[in-house]
Image (cartoon, rainbow, N blue to C red; front, side, top):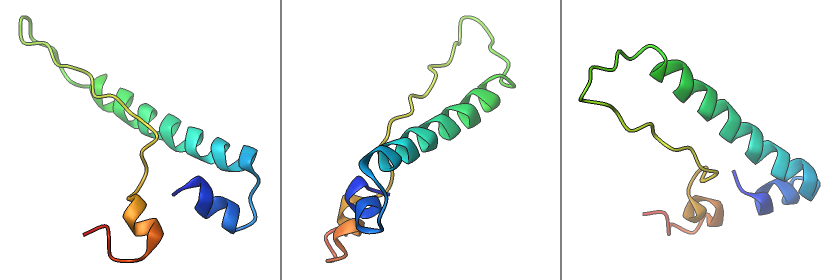
Length: 68
């Protein structure tokens, strides 16, 4: 998913950005749900994974084989 891809399908910039924010929120919720079930045994704490809006491969958006 890319903003240029959303724009090419007729979505506005605002809607495109909103979809990327929503995808990050969904990923964060899934991460938090998982980590809330993990028992943390001191001193072996776990680093909580970060979630960023890096959805998909830019090469795949280009559709020119550059994702390989």
